[in-house]
Image (tube, rainbow, N blue to C red; front, side):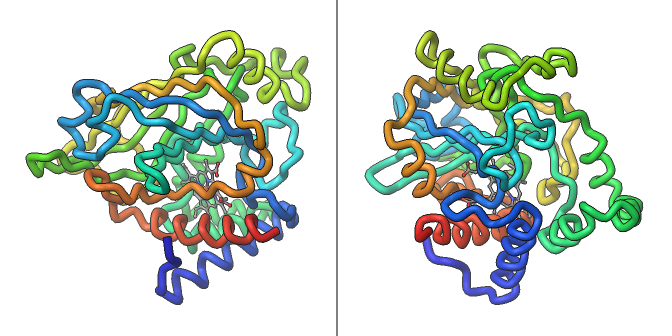
Length: 306
Ligand code: HEM
């Protein structure tokens, strides 16, 4: 995938990378956000209803191999799993459609984002460590206030966390029917978070260790859902959540069974893409999508060459 040619967008993408470097330090070979992670292999099987929503190839096939990366927040590769600052966690899924052809879903454990645009996020990163400035920023950005105040508890396991695609996509089926929706990944083991007391007993790598043990015993399962927008719902604003009464359509199931042998090397190489780039799932006009695609590519190329 080539980088976009829009110079303003590229400048903002570079400025955001520098701001993340500044906040977390530079750790060559690691991601500047969601630095600590692990990769798993598995299989996606669509539901019978999936093709009614989208003509995407993996929605119409018996099964598709996937790669999933679970991650902790921040650009600190050694952040303790027990550190509450490591929330929200991440879950990035790659569907391998053909040799070198793929589409991704990137989800995080918080349902929403503090700001609508990249330039606001740049400002948010700048003021984050300066209490007086942060207070001013938050006063003018109610969504940032909501996001900061939203509970972000530690998961008991990556397999008991729910993940949200946050930005809307436009789905289209073979009949040409189009609908906006947002991906969600729901753990089959149920959502389980830890209380402050439970967290106090947990070690530095309790999440990654638990996943190793769990995967050997039982496969890790997630249901993939799409929350469908209603007429009038804002579809280009990651700070606005739609009512929980909106229809949730189940489009398939992920079953994760194995780790990669060369995990560190693979993590350094793989670059997830916030834009699906597959027929039947188009990005919405949410301004974060195109920008993030540029940032993740710039960042990924830097990581590969480290
Ligand atoms: C302007 C807003 C954002 C910026 C600047 C940003 C920045 C970044 C960067 C630089 C990376 C590392 C990419 C790489 O090196 O491969 C990353 C990864 C990630 N971001 Fe964002 N991000 C933003 C918004 C979001 C949103 C809205 C979500 C919600 C789903 C999200 C979830 C993730 C996840 C899960 C990863 C890890 C992907 C992986 O495992 O490779 N980010 N982000």
